[in-house]
Figure 1 (cartoon, rainbow, N blue to C red):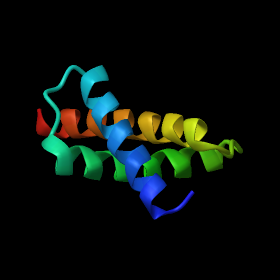
Figure 2: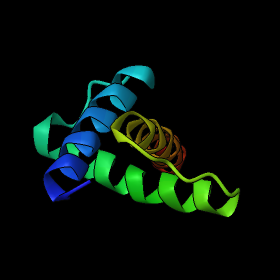
Figure 3: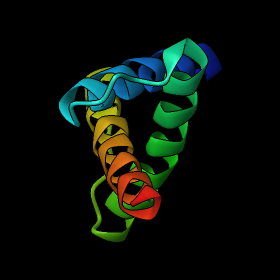
Figure 4: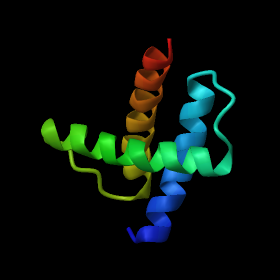
Length: 79
């Protein structure tokens, strides 16, 4: 997946994670950042357990899980 696909998956994952965590979202750029950071976090965590995502949908799921974890941590730190 190229950089454009990575950014699209990050944007979608950030948007979906924001809705899943019942947040208002962070806007287009904020969702992109959350999604891309989430993709990195999710990729790292899934690599640790030995799961390697192949294909756009699998990478989107990994990015979504990472973004949810990131939003959960940010929510805990803000409180």
